[in-house]
Structures are given as structure tokens and as C-alpha cells.
Amino acid sequence: MSIVTLSPWDLSLAAGLVGLVALLSYLMHLHLERQILIAAARTTVQLMLVGMVLKALFSHVHLGWIVLVACIMLLAAGREVLVRQKRRFAGMWGFGLGTFSMFVSSFAITILTLTVLIGPDPWYEPQYAVPLLGMLLGNTMNGIAVGLDRLTSSAWDQRTLIEGRLIQGETWHQAIETLRRESIRGGLIPVINSMAAAGLVSLPGMMTGQILGGNPPMEAVKYQILIMFLIAGGTGIGTVAAVWLGSRRLFDARQRLCLDRLKNH
Image (cartoon, rainbow, N blue to C red; front, top):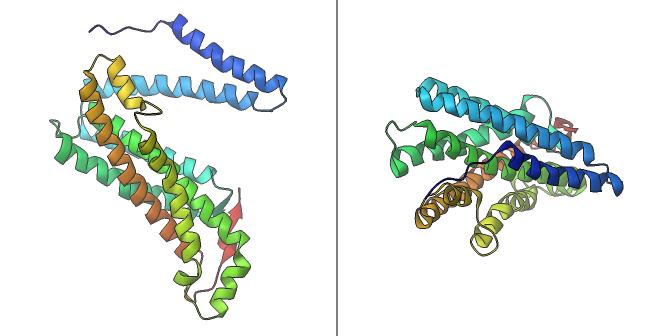
């Protein structure tokens, strides 16, 4: 099966659709046209740069370069988690919570997958390591961002209720248990919906890309199932870790609610 290459003209026509959306935003006074165009420009520049980096990595396979790229991806994902929160933790906690949780979940699962499940030679082969880590980080980032945002916003809005439960003798763990549970649930709902709709409502991106690239459909399906299970595991572990650590950070050593540790976006 031959691979159909895309010309600059093909990409320009696709970009015209984004321009149409920006025009509709302007005509309807949605005030999103600038954000749409900037996002489209960032997508183009970032993906072109990634393409060049991957081309270099594929030509010069070295663990040090893979680690460097992985760290850059992790730091970028940590920043995205931070900026998506309306009320974030002050200081390095705001950046560190999400970054640490993604490191524990996404990196551990990526290494497990490369060494045990897929087993390329070498195990850090960039053709597998970089795309796999990117998919895990991207989805885990969304779950953690939603979970932390719901936790901090709910704690701020329901601070009187939490403090009342503390006065009645409950521990910090008991006082925020319901909010923590709902925050974790909110972070996991998107990935659950993705798994439930896969194949019936949508064809996931990796599967579609492999099929368009000429791979047999059943091989693409098996890889997509693997990836979705890994994403669900990474998102679940990362969200639970981030929300649990975040809920503990909301209280001091004397189990008092400390909302001064939060700041507005």
C-alpha cells in the first residue's frame, strides 16, 4: 500500500478551515479569533520543530538525547497544568504538584511499556519512546489539570463547610474526602468517555494515523487498545496522586484549612 504525501497546498486548504472559524468568531463577536489564529500558528511551528527534532533523534539514537527531550516535554506539560487552574497553589507547589504526578505516572508506565510490553531494541528507541510518552503526558496532563482545578475551586467555594466539619472534630482527611473524590472523578471522566466511544463514535488518532500510513488495520487496532489502556492507567494514577497531594497541601500540620496557600490565576 502506497503512502499519499501531503503538499503545502493541501495543508493550506486545511488551514483555510481554521481561518473560516476565526472569521465566524469575528462576525459573531465571540472574541476568540485571535486565540484561534495564535493556536493554529503555534500548532504549525511546534509540530514542525518536533518533526525536525524527531528526524535528528531517529538518525542519532542516544539515551541522553531521549532523556533531554522527555524532560522538556514534562516541564511543558507541568506548565500547562499550572496555567489551566483558576486557583492554583502558590509558589513551586503550583508547578510541582502536576509535574511530579505526571513524572510518577507517565514515565513509569512508559518505561514499563517499552521494556516489558513492546520491547524495542534498544528499549529507548525514539520511534516508540517519544510518541508513547507524548500521548501519555498529554492525556494525563488533562486529567490532572481538571482534578486539581476542581479541588481548589471547590475547597474555596465550600471553605465554610470544610471548616465546620473540622470544628466538629473531623480530621482533614474526612473533611475534604467528598471534594477529593469528586475531583478525581472529574479528572477521570474524559478518559472513560474516550474509551467508551472508541470505535463507535470516533477512530482514535493513533489508529487513524497508522491506517493512513499503510499499516494493517488489525495491527493498528491492537496498538490503539494498548495505548488507550496505558492512557487510562496513567491518567488514573496521576490524577489520584495529584489530587491527594493537593488536598493534603490545603491543610497545615495542625489540620487547619489554609486557603492562603492558593492564589487566583
